[in-house]
Length: 162
Image (cartoon, rainbow, N blue to C red; front, side):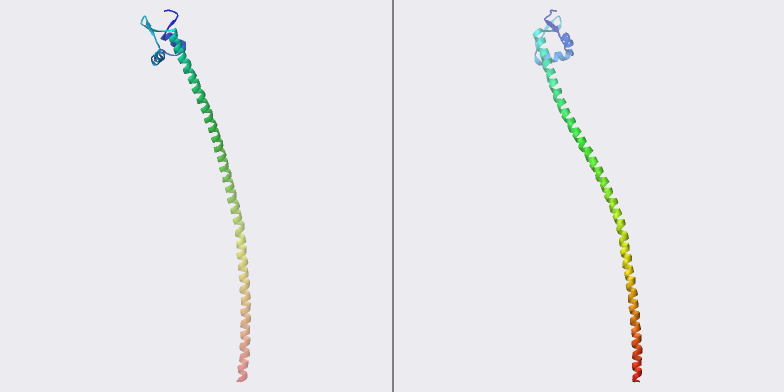
């Protein structure tokens, strides 16, 4: 073979791919080929076209990879922000829970303090009732005493007329 032509196998080895891929590129892009001794060969201009195709494809892949990396970095940044927000929310929920427990404990202690004072008021009220009962009994006794005196006086008065 002459130096200005290459077989599909030689070009595939040079570009680091396989013969099938080179054949698909040739068919897809209608690149001219020749057949010499039952082998398909490519002239320099066809080889240049395939190399250019690989170069463009590599650039497109690099651009795609670059775009994907950028998007991946953005997604990673969003995930990090969401993770921070979730962590902050959990910390706030824990603080709320602690405050609620403190308020409950404080409320219970206030109830405990309030209860005896109600008992004291109740005891004071009962003592006042007892005192008032005693005073009423004393007054009742005085009234009975007065009635007895009135009865005695009235007996004397009746007796006086008899």
